[in-house]
Image 1 (cartoon, rainbow, N blue to C red):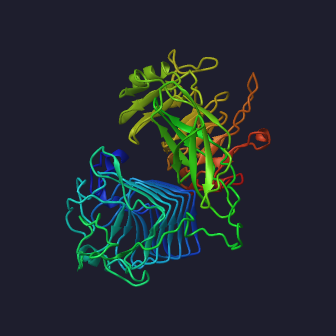
Image 2: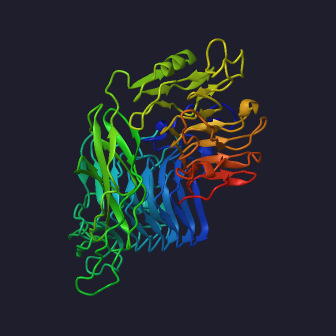
Image 3: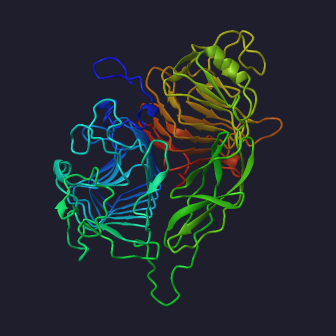
Length: 595
């Protein structure tokens, strides 16, 4: 990334993962901002490595943030950056989201009457200061690693009060007290309730996670008097007000002579937020959620399978999902994704998912998916750093292999002619500054051309073959994920007027970023085409777009142009609402969006 005033930052998202400093301060721009907002929602969207906060509110009421995924920030340090932040937010719902590699999830600065339910965090649940009160944290998972600490910082570091980092490590709950709270508008307020959460803290590097507030049927009302939960009580140790939460996280504030947590109540229903409106005997919620559909494998390694599925529906509300391997429960998820680990290489597993609601009703499984792990060590990943190595690795690619690019430019045309499978794909991956460059066509094209024999197509990557990425007819079940496409200089020759030309079948195209600016010829960001082949295939059909970000530079018509719907009636292309576009002549797509 370029630096303000000259030079570049040579960093990748991995460098920011456990770094609680500001790596690139001039990029401190938030992902999603709701300011002076009311009655709005954020649903099924994603952010990846934002400049600062992934999501932030500044005076917002009656908002919903649901079923979304927020991963990483370049800046998580001094000045308060890199949060999933609820600031001056009231009467709002945060439900079934996944948060990774951010500094905190916060309610702060008078935030009140909010609910965070069914979320999956790897950071702390943070009452950051400013008299936040009457907020409910229910049925969330927060697994906080040992490395999650302000002292893990390289540059532009700071602790919660704006000073230098201290030697504390964040626990699953943080409460504003003393000078740190004064810095951010005062102490945390009363009746912030923790109930039914799965909280854990890794106390040593690489060690086991220690349960925190482990009684999941007990209400822990933080900032509340033991005699009256609605009355405020500052956290106190042996009768003295604590001046800093750091180092005081494991005191039992519910028992005298300590004070500040009311833990007198229990509840066996499983939810304070989701309640049946029918009070008759035996007439509680007995309706199970719908079966989760669309179970799919999104990635495999030699010892893991990554699963994703479509959300279930329930008359009251879905609180989580249980994942089964060969008929045995192996884990649970608050969101619609799960990574099953500890598997054997080159082995097939039967995977299934059931949904559950707050009343304990479980759905039927939405079918069983057979997924196979990749082969073991010794060729699963091939690292390349030159164009010649890349050409050789692609030529020798086989199912289950990953070709991993080092940072740098790879000039030429690159081809693979061997197909992967749905359970063992061939994967080409690398950092954002690994760039494929082709200086233009040369030589005379043979019949049924592929690069070689003195002919260079002028395209970068052939799957066998064309534009930035040309997904050829007859290929199927691939994944194009997490790439960056820069359309500057596209010539328009050989129909090269988009980032990706999709003629294959049932591809998943997700979380890519594309831009275009002059010079060049540019029609649409992604296009489908339906060429005829022998034997006949449903070419250009059944492809899915999720979470892609497109800037068409005021030139391109659609981010995603579906050329024909009539040729794909039995296996239609799908464009989800989580895709976004700016500077488009016509809009996001020319077909109806799917939630």
